[in-house]
Length: 242
Image 1 (cartoon, rainbow, N blue to C red):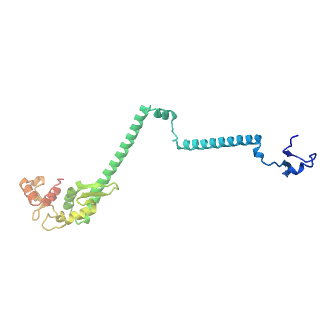
Image 2: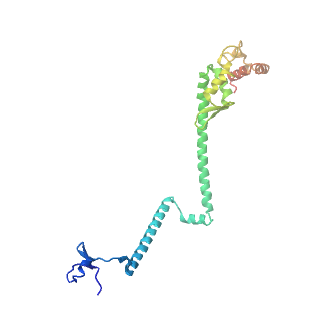
Image 3: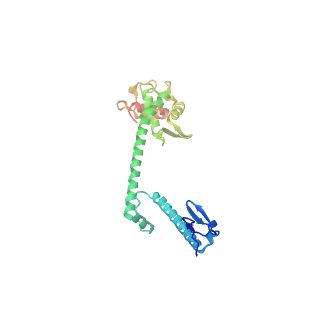
């Protein structure tokens, strides 16, 4: 007769067998050594281990699939992906995408250029005038002529600030104007020996300006251009010639 492994009571059990049972949670459990070696137990344990391994592998695959799914964009299209994977890209879709990207590029380029244009206009109308005034070029004719001479070199940096490319590298507009006024443009900040406030050559009146239509004189223009280029620039500015 086989011994039962679990009993509700030891009543009716041979006294010689009772010591082999231990009470656990109201039950009497047969105490057996080497139970894991029993063929049926070993088979059951092996089956459990295989089931556990399969379950763990399934969980790992599930977690990997979830992570991969999160990496896909919301508008992921499996059919398009299959075409791309097989080397059969949707040419129409690619053309449309390129056109969209090019349109976005052109729009931002236009916005950037427009902003650069506004910044340059402000730099020439406001910043250059302020810089010249700060450097001592305050007479209207002097300032107008100086703006005409310097405006072509003014650029706008990526930071939106005006600058001038010089032999010393990029220089801020204020610093460039100060440098210019201290050297090449020094006659624009002094009243001595240059052009008077009326836009005429020293000792002349504004009516003597050879660039004005009513007193135009090509011979005098050539003479002043040769002897005093800066005075010529001022006279041209006073006559409204850029």
